[in-house]
Amino acid sequence: MRFLRVKVVTKAKEDRIILKGDSAKIYTTASPEKGKANQKIIGLLAEFFRVKKTQVQIVKGFKIRDKTIVIKL
Image 1: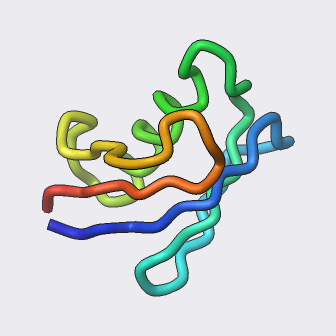
Image 2: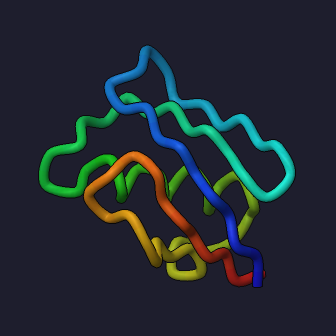
């Protein structure tokens, strides 16, 4: 299991992940409305770490830019 502190930038030009140790900055084209950005972040991280979406979970920061995410490897 890996904990990741994430800073999210929504409405970006492209989807991108910048990983630095146990933290990351994620740029997503999704808007923050109705949890769309959260779902996109989960999908991006699942693809990046090559795990299923169900193995990626936001545990803190559902409605703010700073999030804590658990990835079950």
